[in-house]
Length: 300
Image 1 (cartoon, rainbow, N blue to C red):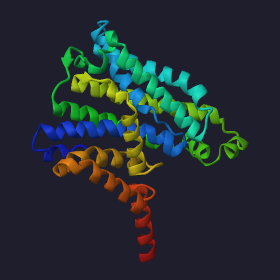
Image 2 (image 1 turned 30 degrees about the vertical axis):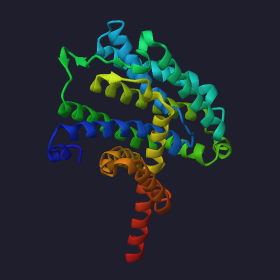
Image 3 (image 1 turned 180 degrees about the vertical axis):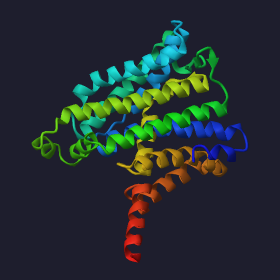
Image 4 (image 1 turned 135 degrees about the vertical axis):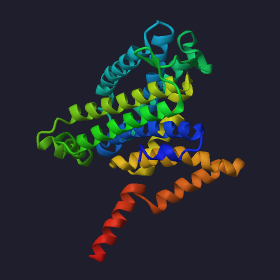
């Protein structure tokens, strides 16, 4: 599908939207591992997305690092940061954990907004283009290819992770931490591991998007962006790899399609979300899969 779809795009605008869809899907994959499989809520994941873009941009623009080095160095650093932050934060549960991750997002947003010498302040900052082996990565078609490859690798890794003993440990954490501990699962280790994985995927997506668009603002770390990412995961279906992709695709494309409603765009968008949760309570993909299974069983 990733190979065939580009041949149907009539102009570069469709490639731009497709890149945004694919990068959002990468973030949602990691967030779905955290929320859907491990059962750990996060309302501050946009902070990791923004830090990925800002970190690579600052190292390249302010300190002269080559972008092929600044990007992986930033992603690795954010993985370490997520481990340091996640160790105390993941001791909380339920709404306390949601409040803690929300606080993390607020802190990052305030720092990015107020440290104007490094980040450009509320107006944001320019991001140098990504250069690898002397070749500047530019053009919507090329970036679509990069985003498609990154998503394909992320899906492959996530699928193998879920089908492994680690994936079963994550589902045990979600089902009952006490029951998981009784069978020898080190709960804290796996909760922290999946938190770091989801943060790294968010940072990688944020860094790539920043270099692709050439600009980044503190709004990328805002609470609303974090909520949008969580809604994508819930909309598509928690504990579903394909649900994360479908949710990211539908909710990225939907605002583009609803522009015809002009002043009523937000109202219609909200109505679509409400209707989806009523008729697809488990998310689009799990609900449709369940209906298909029932239909196949009745026919047989």
